[in-house]
Image 1: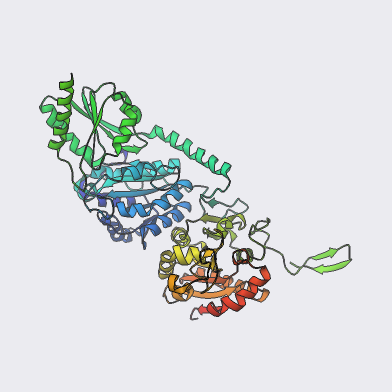
Image 2: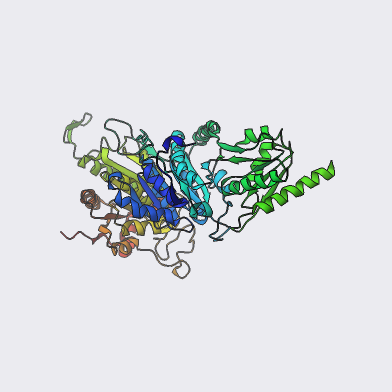
Length: 365
Length: 260
Protein backbone atom coordinates (compact mmCIF):
# COMPACT_ATOMS: atom_id res chain seq x y z
CA UNK A 1 0.00 0.00 0.00
CA UNK A 2 2.79 2.39 0.90
CA UNK A 3 5.28 1.31 -1.74
CA UNK A 4 6.12 4.88 -2.67
CA UNK A 5 7.80 5.34 0.72
CA UNK A 6 10.08 2.31 0.48
CA UNK A 7 13.50 2.82 -1.02
CA UNK A 8 15.75 1.27 1.62
CA UNK A 9 17.12 -2.17 2.28
CA UNK A 10 15.10 -4.32 4.68
CA UNK A 11 16.00 -4.29 8.38
CA UNK A 12 15.12 -6.67 11.18
CA UNK A 13 13.17 -4.74 13.82
CA UNK A 14 10.68 -5.05 16.64
CA UNK A 15 7.21 -3.79 15.78
CA UNK A 16 7.27 -1.11 18.47
CA UNK A 17 10.69 0.14 17.37
CA UNK A 18 9.76 0.16 13.68
CA UNK A 19 6.73 2.26 14.60
CA UNK A 20 8.84 4.67 16.66
CA UNK A 21 11.40 5.06 13.86
CA UNK A 22 8.58 5.66 11.38
CA UNK A 23 7.27 8.41 13.67
CA UNK A 24 10.65 10.16 13.57
CA UNK A 25 10.71 9.83 9.78
CA UNK A 26 7.16 11.21 9.59
CA UNK A 27 8.57 14.36 11.23
CA UNK A 28 6.38 14.34 14.28
CA UNK A 29 6.65 17.54 16.31
CA UNK A 30 5.98 15.82 19.60
CA UNK A 31 5.47 12.55 21.39
CA UNK A 32 3.78 12.50 24.80
CA UNK A 33 3.47 9.20 26.62
CA UNK A 34 3.63 7.12 29.75
CA UNK A 35 5.30 3.71 30.11
CA UNK A 36 3.18 0.57 30.02
CA UNK A 37 3.90 -2.97 28.87
CA UNK A 38 3.89 -4.12 26.08
CA UNK A 39 4.57 -0.82 24.31
CA UNK A 40 7.31 0.87 26.36
CA UNK A 41 9.85 0.32 23.55
CA UNK A 42 8.16 3.15 21.68
CA UNK A 43 8.92 5.84 24.28
CA UNK A 44 12.29 4.21 25.01
CA UNK A 45 13.30 4.23 21.34
CA UNK A 46 12.24 7.86 20.92
CA UNK A 47 14.01 8.93 24.14
CA UNK A 48 17.18 7.28 22.86
CA UNK A 49 17.07 8.27 19.18
CA UNK A 50 15.55 11.75 19.09
CA UNK A 51 18.51 13.47 20.82
CA UNK A 52 20.71 12.15 17.96
CA UNK A 53 18.49 13.87 15.41
CA UNK A 54 18.48 17.41 16.70
CA UNK A 55 17.68 18.88 13.28
CA UNK A 56 14.22 17.32 13.54
CA UNK A 57 13.35 19.38 16.62
CA UNK A 58 11.07 16.72 18.10
CA UNK A 59 9.67 16.99 21.63
CA UNK A 60 9.65 13.70 23.57
CA UNK A 61 8.04 14.05 26.98
CA UNK A 62 7.22 11.40 29.54
CA UNK A 63 4.06 12.63 31.22
CA UNK A 64 2.81 11.90 34.74
CA UNK A 65 -0.09 9.81 33.42
CA UNK A 66 -1.91 8.85 30.25
CA UNK A 67 -4.47 11.49 31.20
CA UNK A 68 -1.76 14.13 31.04
CA UNK A 69 -0.30 12.69 27.80
CA UNK A 70 -3.58 12.86 25.91
CA UNK A 71 -4.23 16.40 27.13
CA UNK A 72 -0.73 17.51 26.17
CA UNK A 73 -1.56 16.01 22.80
CA UNK A 74 -4.76 18.09 22.67
CA UNK A 75 -2.76 21.25 23.35
CA UNK A 76 -0.01 20.50 20.85
CA UNK A 77 -2.38 19.25 18.12
CA UNK A 78 -4.51 22.36 18.70
CA UNK A 79 -1.37 24.42 18.11
CA UNK A 80 -1.01 22.74 14.72
CA UNK A 81 1.71 20.25 15.63
CA UNK A 82 1.97 16.67 14.31
CA UNK A 83 1.64 14.68 17.52
CA UNK A 84 1.60 11.01 18.49
CA UNK A 85 1.10 9.09 21.71
CA UNK A 86 1.18 5.39 22.47
CA UNK A 87 -0.07 3.18 25.26
CA UNK A 88 -1.66 -0.15 25.97
CA UNK A 89 -5.22 -1.04 26.97
CA UNK A 90 -5.48 0.24 30.60
CA UNK A 91 -3.66 3.42 29.59
CA UNK A 92 -5.88 3.89 26.55
CA UNK A 93 -8.90 3.65 28.86
CA UNK A 94 -7.49 6.60 30.80
CA UNK A 95 -7.22 8.56 27.54
CA UNK A 96 -10.86 8.16 26.53
CA UNK A 97 -12.04 11.47 27.98
CA UNK A 98 -9.26 13.30 26.16
CA UNK A 99 -9.97 11.47 22.91
CA UNK A 100 -13.61 12.53 23.09
CA UNK A 101 -12.49 16.17 23.43
CA UNK A 102 -9.95 15.76 20.60
CA UNK A 103 -12.56 14.23 18.30
CA UNK A 104 -15.05 16.96 19.22
CA UNK A 105 -12.52 19.74 18.64
CA UNK A 106 -11.54 17.97 15.38
CA UNK A 107 -7.83 17.78 16.04
CA UNK A 108 -5.66 15.48 13.92
CA UNK A 109 -3.29 13.26 15.88
CA UNK A 110 -2.27 9.63 16.14
CA UNK A 111 -2.80 7.24 19.06
CA UNK A 112 -1.17 3.82 19.16
CA UNK A 113 -2.84 1.09 21.23
CA UNK A 114 -0.62 -1.97 21.65
CA UNK A 115 -3.46 -4.04 23.06
CA UNK A 116 -3.06 -6.45 25.98
CA UNK A 117 -5.59 -8.79 27.52
CA UNK A 118 -8.28 -7.42 29.83
CA UNK A 119 -10.54 -6.39 31.44
CA UNK A 120 -8.90 -4.64 34.37
CA UNK A 121 -5.19 -4.85 34.78
CA UNK A 122 -5.52 -8.10 32.83
CA UNK A 123 -2.41 -9.55 31.31
CA UNK A 124 0.52 -8.19 29.35
CA UNK A 125 -0.04 -10.81 26.64
CA UNK A 126 -1.51 -9.84 23.24
CA UNK A 127 -5.24 -9.42 22.75
CA UNK A 128 -7.79 -7.78 20.46
CA UNK A 129 -10.17 -7.02 23.30
CA UNK A 130 -10.20 -3.25 22.67
CA UNK A 131 -12.01 -3.49 19.31
CA UNK A 132 -15.27 -2.08 20.69
CA UNK A 133 -13.49 0.74 22.49
CA UNK A 134 -11.48 1.68 19.39
CA UNK A 135 -14.18 1.47 16.74
CA UNK A 136 -17.32 2.63 18.53
CA UNK A 137 -15.93 5.85 19.97
CA UNK A 138 -14.61 4.76 23.36
CA UNK A 139 -15.31 7.94 25.27
CA UNK A 140 -18.56 9.87 25.73
CA UNK A 141 -20.68 11.29 22.94
CA UNK A 142 -21.16 10.56 19.25
CA UNK A 143 -17.75 10.29 17.63
CA UNK A 144 -15.39 7.92 15.88
CA UNK A 145 -11.67 7.49 15.56
CA UNK A 146 -10.11 6.41 12.27
CA UNK A 147 -8.81 2.94 13.16
CA UNK A 148 -6.03 1.12 11.33
CA UNK A 149 -5.09 -2.48 12.17
CA UNK A 150 -1.62 -3.58 11.06
CA UNK A 151 -0.78 -7.29 10.82
CA UNK A 152 3.00 -7.08 10.37
CA UNK A 153 6.00 -5.10 11.55
CA UNK A 154 6.03 -3.57 8.07
CA UNK A 155 2.55 -2.19 8.59
CA UNK A 156 3.39 -1.02 12.13
CA UNK A 157 5.78 1.38 10.38
CA UNK A 158 3.68 2.16 7.30
CA UNK A 159 0.52 2.93 9.22
CA UNK A 160 2.19 5.80 11.07
CA UNK A 161 2.32 7.58 7.73
CA UNK A 162 -1.11 6.37 6.69
CA UNK A 163 -2.55 7.34 10.07
CA UNK A 164 -1.24 10.91 9.92
CA UNK A 165 -2.35 11.26 6.29
CA UNK A 166 -5.93 10.32 7.13
CA UNK A 167 -5.98 12.22 10.46
CA UNK A 168 -4.79 15.42 8.82
CA UNK A 169 -7.03 15.04 5.76
CA UNK A 170 -10.14 14.64 7.90
CA UNK A 171 -9.14 16.63 11.03
CA UNK A 172 -9.84 13.57 13.12
CA UNK A 173 -7.84 11.53 15.63
CA UNK A 174 -6.57 8.24 14.20
CA UNK A 175 -5.65 5.09 16.08
CA UNK A 176 -3.30 2.26 15.23
CA UNK A 177 -4.92 -0.74 16.91
CA UNK A 178 -2.23 -3.38 17.22
CA UNK A 179 -1.33 -5.90 19.93
CA UNK A 180 1.45 -7.06 22.21
CA UNK A 181 2.68 -9.71 19.80
CA UNK A 182 2.99 -7.35 16.81
CA UNK A 183 4.66 -4.80 19.08
CA UNK A 184 7.19 -7.25 20.46
CA UNK A 185 7.96 -9.52 17.51
CA UNK A 186 10.82 -8.94 15.11
CA UNK A 187 10.33 -9.07 11.36
CA UNK A 188 11.80 -7.77 8.19
CA UNK A 189 10.78 -4.19 7.53
CA UNK A 190 11.56 -1.62 4.89
CA UNK A 191 11.16 1.69 6.67
CA UNK A 192 9.25 4.59 5.13
CA UNK A 193 11.49 7.19 3.53
CA UNK A 194 12.55 10.04 5.77
CA UNK A 195 10.83 13.42 5.27
CA UNK A 196 8.41 11.99 2.72
CA UNK A 197 5.22 13.04 4.51
CA UNK A 198 4.35 16.67 3.68
CA UNK A 199 3.35 18.93 6.56
CA UNK A 200 1.22 22.07 6.52
CA UNK A 201 0.41 24.40 9.37
CA UNK A 202 -3.37 24.65 9.47
CA UNK A 203 -4.97 28.09 9.68
CA UNK A 204 -7.22 27.04 12.58
CA UNK A 205 -4.26 26.26 14.86
CA UNK A 206 -3.77 28.41 17.96
CA UNK A 207 -0.27 29.75 17.41
CA UNK A 208 -0.88 33.37 18.37
CA UNK A 209 -3.65 35.47 16.85
CA UNK A 210 -2.73 36.83 13.40
CA UNK A 211 -2.27 40.61 13.40
CA UNK A 212 -5.63 42.17 12.49
CA UNK A 213 -6.94 38.63 12.02
CA UNK A 214 -9.53 36.69 13.91
CA UNK A 215 -8.94 34.88 17.17
CA UNK A 216 -8.65 31.07 16.87
CA UNK A 217 -10.36 28.93 19.51
CA UNK A 218 -10.05 25.18 20.09
CA UNK A 219 -13.08 24.06 22.05
CA UNK A 220 -15.69 21.33 22.31
CA UNK A 221 -18.22 23.36 24.29
CA UNK A 222 -21.50 24.26 22.58
CA UNK A 223 -24.09 25.16 25.19
CA UNK A 224 -27.00 25.81 22.81
CA UNK A 225 -28.66 22.56 21.69
CA UNK A 226 -29.05 23.83 18.12
CA UNK A 227 -25.33 24.60 17.94
CA UNK A 228 -24.40 21.26 19.44
CA UNK A 229 -26.60 19.39 17.01
CA UNK A 230 -25.08 21.28 14.10
CA UNK A 231 -21.64 20.14 15.25
CA UNK A 232 -22.98 16.57 15.57
CA UNK A 233 -24.18 16.73 11.96
CA UNK A 234 -20.82 18.12 10.85
CA UNK A 235 -19.10 15.15 12.47
CA UNK A 236 -21.59 12.69 10.98
CA UNK A 237 -20.93 14.10 7.52
CA UNK A 238 -17.21 13.61 8.08
CA UNK A 239 -17.72 10.00 9.13
CA UNK A 240 -19.86 9.51 6.04
CA UNK A 241 -17.05 10.83 3.83
CA UNK A 242 -14.61 8.57 5.66
CA UNK A 243 -16.43 5.55 4.20
CA UNK A 244 -14.46 6.26 0.99
CA UNK A 245 -11.25 5.40 2.83
CA UNK A 246 -12.13 1.76 3.58
CA UNK A 247 -9.13 -0.53 3.15
CA UNK A 248 -9.09 -4.29 3.26
CA UNK A 249 -7.14 -7.26 1.95
CA UNK A 250 -8.65 -10.36 0.35
CA UNK A 251 -6.96 -13.74 0.15
CA UNK A 252 -8.41 -16.44 -2.11
CA UNK A 253 -11.93 -15.04 -1.95
CA UNK A 254 -12.61 -15.77 -5.63
CA UNK A 255 -13.51 -19.42 -5.15
CA UNK A 256 -13.99 -19.39 -1.36
CA UNK A 257 -16.96 -21.25 0.06
CA UNK A 258 -16.06 -20.29 3.60
CA UNK A 259 -14.93 -16.80 4.42
CA UNK A 260 -12.84 -16.00 7.45
CA UNK A 261 -12.91 -12.43 8.66
CA UNK A 262 -9.94 -11.43 10.82
CA UNK A 263 -7.83 -8.35 11.50
CA UNK A 264 -4.32 -7.81 12.85
CA UNK A 265 -2.52 -10.79 14.30
CA UNK A 266 -5.55 -13.09 13.89
CA UNK A 267 -5.41 -12.55 10.13
CA UNK A 268 -1.85 -13.90 10.08
CA UNK A 269 -3.02 -17.11 11.77
CA UNK A 270 -5.90 -17.33 9.32
CA UNK A 271 -3.49 -17.37 6.38
CA UNK A 272 -2.16 -20.65 7.72
CA UNK A 273 -5.73 -21.90 8.25
CA UNK A 274 -6.42 -21.29 4.55
CA UNK A 275 -3.41 -23.46 3.59
CA UNK A 276 -4.35 -26.25 5.99
CA UNK A 277 -7.99 -26.20 4.87
CA UNK A 278 -7.26 -26.17 1.17
CA UNK A 279 -4.93 -29.17 1.63
CA UNK A 280 -8.04 -30.97 2.84
CA UNK A 281 -10.13 -29.62 -0.03
CA UNK A 282 -12.01 -27.01 2.05
CA UNK A 283 -12.14 -23.79 0.05
CA UNK A 284 -11.42 -21.11 2.65
CA UNK A 285 -10.83 -17.44 1.90
CA UNK A 286 -10.03 -14.44 4.09
CA UNK A 287 -11.17 -10.87 4.25
CA UNK A 288 -8.88 -8.79 6.43
CA UNK A 289 -10.23 -5.35 7.37
CA UNK A 290 -7.27 -2.96 7.40
CA UNK A 291 -9.41 -0.03 8.44
CA UNK A 292 -11.61 -1.16 11.33
CA UNK A 293 -13.32 2.22 11.20
CA UNK A 294 -14.47 2.75 8.51
CA UNK A 295 -15.41 -0.94 8.30
CA UNK A 296 -15.56 -2.83 4.96
CA UNK A 297 -19.26 -3.61 5.39
CA UNK A 298 -20.14 -3.19 1.73
CA UNK A 299 -17.56 -5.71 0.54
CA UNK A 300 -18.57 -8.22 3.20
CA UNK A 301 -22.18 -7.93 2.10
CA UNK A 302 -21.13 -8.66 -1.49
CA UNK A 303 -19.08 -11.65 -0.44
CA UNK A 304 -22.02 -13.00 1.55
CA UNK A 305 -23.68 -13.77 -1.80
CA UNK A 306 -20.84 -16.15 -2.69
CA UNK A 307 -20.00 -18.11 0.45
CA UNK A 308 -21.76 -20.72 2.56
CA UNK A 309 -20.86 -19.11 5.85
CA UNK A 310 -18.47 -16.67 7.44
CA UNK A 311 -16.45 -16.96 10.59
CA UNK A 312 -15.03 -14.05 12.52
CA UNK A 313 -11.71 -15.01 14.13
CA UNK A 314 -10.61 -12.73 16.93
CA UNK A 315 -8.52 -12.66 20.09
CA UNK A 316 -11.48 -11.58 22.22
CA UNK A 317 -15.00 -12.70 23.13
CA UNK A 318 -16.48 -11.74 19.74
CA UNK A 319 -16.42 -8.01 19.11
CA UNK A 320 -15.86 -7.49 15.36
CA UNK A 321 -18.35 -10.35 15.01
CA UNK A 322 -21.16 -7.82 15.55
CA UNK A 323 -19.98 -5.63 12.67
CA UNK A 324 -19.64 -8.65 10.40
CA UNK A 325 -23.18 -9.73 11.25
CA UNK A 326 -24.50 -6.22 10.59
CA UNK A 327 -22.71 -6.16 7.24
CA UNK A 328 -23.95 -9.60 6.19
CA UNK A 329 -27.47 -8.76 7.39
CA UNK A 330 -28.60 -12.35 7.74
CA UNK A 331 -27.61 -13.52 4.25
CA UNK A 332 -25.42 -16.34 5.58
CA UNK A 333 -24.56 -17.67 9.03
CA UNK A 334 -21.70 -15.86 10.77
CA UNK A 335 -19.82 -17.99 13.28
CA UNK A 336 -17.12 -17.05 15.69
CA UNK A 337 -13.85 -18.45 16.91
CA UNK A 338 -11.90 -16.60 19.54
CA UNK A 339 -9.41 -17.02 22.32
CA UNK A 340 -9.00 -14.60 25.19
CA UNK A 341 -6.72 -13.87 28.10
CA UNK A 342 -3.68 -13.27 25.90
CA UNK A 343 -3.89 -16.65 24.17
CA UNK A 344 -3.33 -16.72 20.42
CA UNK A 345 -5.51 -19.35 18.71
CA UNK A 346 -3.71 -22.05 16.74
CA UNK A 347 -4.50 -22.63 13.06
CA UNK A 348 -5.54 -26.18 13.93
CA UNK A 349 -8.20 -25.17 16.43
CA UNK A 350 -9.61 -22.61 14.00
CA UNK A 351 -9.78 -25.26 11.26
CA UNK A 352 -11.45 -27.64 13.70
CA UNK A 353 -14.11 -25.02 14.38
CA UNK A 354 -14.66 -24.53 10.62
CA UNK A 355 -14.99 -28.28 10.11
CA UNK A 356 -17.53 -28.59 12.90
CA UNK A 357 -19.76 -26.00 11.16
CA UNK A 358 -19.22 -27.66 7.79
CA UNK A 359 -20.35 -30.92 9.27
CA UNK A 360 -23.50 -29.31 10.69
CA UNK A 361 -24.39 -27.82 7.32
CA UNK A 362 -23.94 -31.13 5.51
CA UNK A 363 -26.11 -32.96 8.03
CA UNK A 364 -28.88 -30.40 7.60
CA UNK A 365 -28.68 -30.64 3.79
CA UNK B 1 -4.99 57.64 27.40
CA UNK B 2 -6.04 61.00 28.82
CA UNK B 3 -8.37 62.39 26.19
CA UNK B 4 -10.91 64.93 27.50
CA UNK B 5 -14.48 63.84 28.04
CA UNK B 6 -17.44 66.08 28.66
CA UNK B 7 -20.64 65.47 30.54
CA UNK B 8 -22.73 67.95 28.56
CA UNK B 9 -25.66 68.00 30.88
CA UNK B 10 -23.61 69.27 33.78
CA UNK B 11 -20.92 71.00 31.74
CA UNK B 12 -18.22 69.19 33.69
CA UNK B 13 -14.89 68.35 32.16
CA UNK B 14 -13.75 64.78 32.91
CA UNK B 15 -10.29 63.41 32.46
CA UNK B 16 -10.07 59.78 31.37
CA UNK B 17 -7.89 58.06 33.94
CA UNK B 18 -8.76 54.52 32.94
CA UNK B 19 -10.25 52.62 30.03
CA UNK B 20 -10.66 48.92 29.36
CA UNK B 21 -8.15 47.26 27.05
CA UNK B 22 -9.39 48.08 23.55
CA UNK B 23 -7.76 45.28 21.56
CA UNK B 24 -7.13 42.32 23.83
CA UNK B 25 -10.56 42.37 25.48
CA UNK B 26 -13.73 42.05 23.39
CA UNK B 27 -16.16 44.89 23.99
CA UNK B 28 -19.01 42.77 25.34
CA UNK B 29 -20.51 42.40 28.83
CA UNK B 30 -19.14 39.62 31.04
CA UNK B 31 -21.58 36.85 31.93
CA UNK B 32 -20.15 36.66 35.45
CA UNK B 33 -22.36 37.41 38.44
CA UNK B 34 -22.26 40.99 39.78
CA UNK B 35 -19.28 41.45 42.08
CA UNK B 36 -17.43 38.33 40.93
CA UNK B 37 -13.64 38.52 40.75
CA UNK B 38 -13.37 36.70 37.40
CA UNK B 39 -14.18 39.76 35.30
CA UNK B 40 -11.54 41.85 37.07
CA UNK B 41 -8.92 39.14 36.60
CA UNK B 42 -9.84 38.75 32.90
CA UNK B 43 -9.59 42.47 32.40
CA UNK B 44 -6.24 42.84 34.17
CA UNK B 45 -4.75 39.86 32.31
CA UNK B 46 -5.67 41.35 28.95
CA UNK B 47 -4.56 44.80 30.08
CA UNK B 48 -1.09 43.41 30.70
CA UNK B 49 -1.09 41.44 27.42
CA UNK B 50 -1.99 44.64 25.60
CA UNK B 51 0.54 46.79 27.43
CA UNK B 52 3.35 44.30 26.82
CA UNK B 53 2.33 44.12 23.14
CA UNK B 54 2.10 40.33 23.17
CA UNK B 55 -1.50 39.85 22.01
CA UNK B 56 -0.32 38.04 18.86
CA UNK B 57 2.14 35.91 20.82
CA UNK B 58 -0.06 34.75 23.67
CA UNK B 59 -2.10 31.56 23.85
CA UNK B 60 -4.43 31.01 26.79
CA UNK B 61 -6.03 27.86 28.12
CA UNK B 62 -9.51 28.05 29.64
CA UNK B 63 -10.69 25.55 32.24
CA UNK B 64 -13.98 23.90 33.08
CA UNK B 65 -15.69 26.14 35.59
CA UNK B 66 -17.24 29.60 35.49
CA UNK B 67 -14.42 30.84 33.25
CA UNK B 68 -14.99 28.11 30.66
CA UNK B 69 -15.95 30.85 28.19
CA UNK B 70 -12.84 32.99 28.87
CA UNK B 71 -12.24 33.03 25.10
CA UNK B 72 -15.48 34.97 24.62
CA UNK B 73 -13.77 37.89 26.35
CA UNK B 74 -10.04 37.52 25.74
CA UNK B 75 -9.24 38.36 22.14
CA UNK B 76 -6.30 36.00 21.80
CA UNK B 77 -5.88 32.45 20.50
CA UNK B 78 -7.24 30.10 23.13
CA UNK B 79 -7.94 26.46 23.86
CA UNK B 80 -10.63 25.10 26.15
CA UNK B 81 -9.34 22.19 28.23
CA UNK B 82 -11.03 19.22 29.87
CA UNK B 83 -11.75 19.59 33.60
CA UNK B 84 -8.47 19.76 35.51
CA UNK B 85 -6.19 19.39 32.49
CA UNK B 86 -5.49 23.02 31.59
CA UNK B 87 -1.85 22.87 32.66
CA UNK B 88 -1.28 19.67 30.62
CA UNK B 89 -2.87 21.34 27.60
CA UNK B 90 -0.71 24.43 28.21
CA UNK B 91 2.34 22.14 28.43
CA UNK B 92 1.49 20.68 25.03
CA UNK B 93 1.17 24.14 23.49
CA UNK B 94 4.31 25.57 25.11
CA UNK B 95 6.47 22.57 24.21
CA UNK B 96 5.72 22.92 20.50
CA UNK B 97 5.66 26.75 20.55
CA UNK B 98 8.42 27.60 23.04
CA UNK B 99 8.70 31.22 21.86
CA UNK B 100 5.07 32.05 22.60
CA UNK B 101 3.57 33.20 25.89
CA UNK B 102 1.26 30.55 27.31
CA UNK B 103 -0.99 30.77 30.34
CA UNK B 104 -3.56 28.51 31.96
CA UNK B 105 -6.52 29.86 33.90
CA UNK B 106 -8.19 27.57 36.43
CA UNK B 107 -10.43 27.60 39.47
CA UNK B 108 -9.93 25.72 42.74
CA UNK B 109 -11.91 22.62 41.81
CA UNK B 110 -10.18 22.40 38.47
CA UNK B 111 -6.62 23.05 39.65
CA UNK B 112 -6.59 21.70 43.19
CA UNK B 113 -9.03 18.75 43.06
CA UNK B 114 -9.46 16.95 39.75
CA UNK B 115 -6.30 18.44 38.24
CA UNK B 116 -3.96 18.12 41.23
CA UNK B 117 -1.62 15.66 39.49
CA UNK B 118 -1.33 17.86 36.40
CA UNK B 119 -0.79 20.96 38.56
CA UNK B 120 1.98 19.40 40.65
CA UNK B 121 3.79 17.83 37.69
CA UNK B 122 3.50 20.85 35.43
CA UNK B 123 5.22 22.95 38.09
CA UNK B 124 7.65 20.15 38.91
CA UNK B 125 8.80 20.08 35.27
CA UNK B 126 9.18 23.84 35.51
CA UNK B 127 7.06 24.42 32.42
CA UNK B 128 7.64 27.96 31.25
CA UNK B 129 4.04 29.00 31.53
CA UNK B 130 1.94 31.24 33.76
CA UNK B 131 -0.67 29.46 35.84
CA UNK B 132 -3.51 31.64 37.10
CA UNK B 133 -5.41 30.07 39.98
CA UNK B 134 -8.72 31.58 41.07
CA UNK B 135 -9.49 30.47 44.62
CA UNK B 136 -13.01 31.28 45.76
CA UNK B 137 -13.44 28.18 47.88
CA UNK B 138 -16.45 26.87 46.00
CA UNK B 139 -17.63 25.22 42.77
CA UNK B 140 -19.38 28.19 41.22
CA UNK B 141 -20.57 26.88 37.86
CA UNK B 142 -22.19 23.71 39.15
CA UNK B 143 -24.12 25.62 41.80
CA UNK B 144 -22.02 26.08 44.90
CA UNK B 145 -20.63 22.72 46.00
CA UNK B 146 -17.69 22.20 48.36
CA UNK B 147 -14.25 22.79 46.85
CA UNK B 148 -10.85 21.55 48.03
CA UNK B 149 -10.25 25.09 49.31
CA UNK B 150 -13.60 25.50 51.12
CA UNK B 151 -12.97 26.78 54.66
CA UNK B 152 -13.59 24.53 57.70
CA UNK B 153 -17.20 24.98 58.74
CA UNK B 154 -18.13 26.77 55.51
CA UNK B 155 -21.62 25.96 54.27
CA UNK B 156 -21.98 24.79 50.67
CA UNK B 157 -24.60 22.66 48.92
CA UNK B 158 -22.53 19.51 49.56
CA UNK B 159 -21.48 20.57 53.05
CA UNK B 160 -24.88 21.91 54.18
CA UNK B 161 -23.89 21.66 57.87
CA UNK B 162 -20.49 23.22 57.27
CA UNK B 163 -17.26 21.61 56.07
CA UNK B 164 -16.47 18.82 58.53
CA UNK B 165 -12.71 18.37 58.46
CA UNK B 166 -13.02 14.94 60.11
CA UNK B 167 -14.95 13.72 57.11
CA UNK B 168 -13.46 15.55 54.17
CA UNK B 169 -10.14 16.91 55.35
CA UNK B 170 -8.76 20.43 55.54
CA UNK B 171 -8.55 23.10 52.82
CA UNK B 172 -5.72 22.29 50.43
CA UNK B 173 -3.14 25.06 50.33
CA UNK B 174 -1.83 24.00 46.97
CA UNK B 175 0.03 27.23 46.31
CA UNK B 176 2.29 26.69 49.33
CA UNK B 177 2.63 23.07 48.24
CA UNK B 178 3.83 23.74 44.69
CA UNK B 179 6.08 26.57 45.90
CA UNK B 180 8.28 23.83 47.42
CA UNK B 181 9.09 22.48 43.97
CA UNK B 182 12.32 23.53 42.26
CA UNK B 183 10.38 24.02 39.01
CA UNK B 184 8.42 26.92 40.53
CA UNK B 185 10.12 30.22 39.68
CA UNK B 186 7.67 32.81 40.92
CA UNK B 187 4.78 31.98 43.24
CA UNK B 188 2.51 34.61 44.69
CA UNK B 189 -0.94 34.95 46.24
CA UNK B 190 -2.92 38.05 45.33
CA UNK B 191 -6.50 39.29 45.38
CA UNK B 192 -8.67 41.67 43.40
CA UNK B 193 -11.10 42.70 46.13
CA UNK B 194 -10.15 46.39 46.19
CA UNK B 195 -8.35 48.83 43.85
CA UNK B 196 -5.05 48.57 45.68
CA UNK B 197 -5.14 44.76 45.47
CA UNK B 198 -5.94 44.96 41.75
CA UNK B 199 -2.87 47.15 41.18
CA UNK B 200 -0.66 44.64 43.02
CA UNK B 201 -2.18 41.75 41.08
CA UNK B 202 -1.46 43.57 37.85
CA UNK B 203 2.18 43.99 38.83
CA UNK B 204 2.41 40.28 39.57
CA UNK B 205 0.94 39.38 36.17
CA UNK B 206 3.33 41.74 34.40
CA UNK B 207 6.30 40.22 36.20
CA UNK B 208 5.13 36.71 35.42
CA UNK B 209 4.92 37.39 31.68
CA UNK B 210 8.34 39.04 31.77
CA UNK B 211 9.79 36.04 33.62
CA UNK B 212 8.29 33.68 31.05
CA UNK B 213 10.64 35.15 28.49
CA UNK B 214 13.61 34.09 30.63
CA UNK B 215 12.62 30.40 30.51
CA UNK B 216 13.31 29.94 34.22
CA UNK B 217 10.30 27.90 35.23
CA UNK B 218 6.67 28.09 36.19
CA UNK B 219 5.04 31.29 37.39
CA UNK B 220 2.01 30.70 39.57
CA UNK B 221 -0.42 33.35 40.74
CA UNK B 222 -3.24 32.48 43.12
CA UNK B 223 -6.04 35.01 43.31
CA UNK B 224 -8.10 34.83 46.49
CA UNK B 225 -11.48 35.66 45.06
CA UNK B 226 -15.17 35.64 45.88
CA UNK B 227 -18.36 33.98 44.78
CA UNK B 228 -21.29 36.13 45.93
CA UNK B 229 -23.86 33.79 44.33
CA UNK B 230 -22.33 30.60 45.67
CA UNK B 231 -21.67 32.11 49.07
CA UNK B 232 -25.23 33.53 49.12
CA UNK B 233 -23.96 37.01 49.90
CA UNK B 234 -24.11 40.46 48.41
CA UNK B 235 -20.88 41.52 46.66
CA UNK B 236 -20.05 43.83 49.59
CA UNK B 237 -20.63 41.04 52.14
CA UNK B 238 -18.46 38.71 50.05
CA UNK B 239 -15.58 41.17 50.13
CA UNK B 240 -15.84 41.38 53.91
CA UNK B 241 -15.86 37.58 54.00
CA UNK B 242 -12.62 37.48 51.97
CA UNK B 243 -10.95 39.83 54.45
CA UNK B 244 -12.28 38.21 57.62
CA UNK B 245 -12.25 34.51 56.75
CA UNK B 246 -10.25 33.83 53.59
CA UNK B 247 -7.13 35.92 54.28
CA UNK B 248 -6.31 34.30 57.66
CA UNK B 249 -5.99 30.94 55.88
CA UNK B 250 -4.83 32.28 52.51
CA UNK B 251 -2.59 35.27 53.34
CA UNK B 252 -1.80 37.54 50.41
CA UNK B 253 1.82 38.05 49.39
CA UNK B 254 4.76 36.54 47.54
CA UNK B 255 5.52 32.93 48.47
CA UNK B 256 8.52 32.39 46.22
CA UNK B 257 10.39 35.10 44.40
CA UNK B 258 13.28 34.75 41.98
CA UNK B 259 16.73 35.20 43.48
CA UNK B 260 18.05 38.12 41.45
